[in-house]
Image (cartoon, rainbow over all chains, first blue to last red; front, top):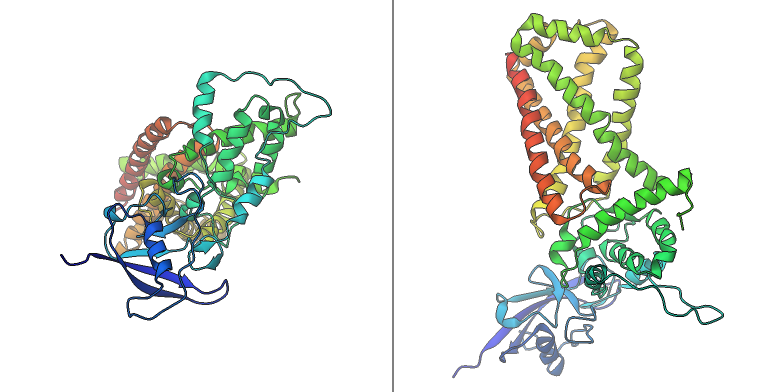
Amino acid sequence: MAEETITLIITRQDDPDSATYDETFKVKYRKNMNIISALMEIQKNPQNADGKRVAPVSWESNCLEEVCGACSMIINDVPRQACSTLVDKLEQPIRIAPMSTFPVVRDLVVDRSRMFESLKKVKAWIPIDGTYDLGPGPRMPEKKRQWAYELSKCMTCGVCLEACPNVNSKSDFIGPAPLSQVRLFNAHPTGEMHKGERLDALMEDGGITGCGNSQNCVQVCPKGIPLTTSIAALNRSTNLQSFKNFFGSDNAY
Amino acid sequence: MENRDFFYRRLHSLLGVVPIGIFLIQHLVVNHFAVYGPDSFNKAAQFMHDLPFRILLEIFIIFIPILFHAILGVYIVFVAKNNVRRYGFFRNWMFYLQRITGIITLIFIIWHVWETRVQIGMGTEELDYSLMENILASPVMFWFYVIGVVSTTFHFANGLWSFLVTWGITVTPRSQRIATYATLIVFLAVTYIGIRALFAFV
């Protein structure tokens, strides 16, 4: 039986400032391969399709079960996780490129730190530290917990930022993912005590007004997070917050 | 002022509907009097012309809001990096078309205001049926006006959809989908009024 191979065309870049180039690799096919296992084959034997030995392709991955968000890349024109993208379901040759919204570190490795900076900016956490035991927090309605749980699935993978036409070098829009996190932490009964601070952060430059309703984010999100519902809900709460801030309210916290 | 960007963007969204959207409908409905004949149109145009404080109404309801909406709008067009080729979703196309029609509408309005309101203001033209009849007698100008009107009504109807999202009125996907159908009906109705009036001049 002839040995089956798969062809990968990878957009490579040797360092953050150098030019990109495409390199073709042929990898022996195995059953149930995903993109990570194909990249691992290249790493074992870094030889391109012309038979020339080259530097192995760099990529990032951690969990291998689509929960960490590290291995996002553009595979056959779709931004997605390399670990959960199965070779059997792809058309050949498979084209792999790094996400274009983020600075490339090397080959398929991108620097997503802007997303973590955005999470810090919108205060995507719940402050519970005090000088004494604050005791248990208030209970949360079950129905609310159910939709909030969906928002908590965000793994900061960057796919929504990649698909958003308003996240680019000309705009300072922080993108859908950190917006939705504000809704998550504002939904939490303890987090809600600081909701005004998060909404105020969304009203700053690069905040929620950067959204142009192209709704690509909700279409591409690998975790199926209702990002556009979050954005519309936050539109409502930032509007109310801005009225409270301007006209005055005892509930503007 | 604090959060200037937020305020300007919300103002931009609001002005597109109130007063610009309302003015657009009023303008097209008044034009529609042309369907009932030149006299009918002239009477309606004269009524609008003779409104009290007309110059103030024009400045605060039409000129300043449109100027603000247009200037910020061109900036919004500039910061987008359209990607309908890779992400051909319906809403992404609407996003793209909203930007394209915004630019077409701006060009159309500048031209239209120049050859009507500015000429009337300078006294070189008279506000009546024959002014539009002469302009639309040229097939090129007629089709320019058709494109201009359709572009404007699309921009208004689709803008109404995003207005509902921006103001947090339609939050759920279902309400947003129904709003898509509702604004489609608005688009068809307003376009019908506008285009029918254009045909009345030829």
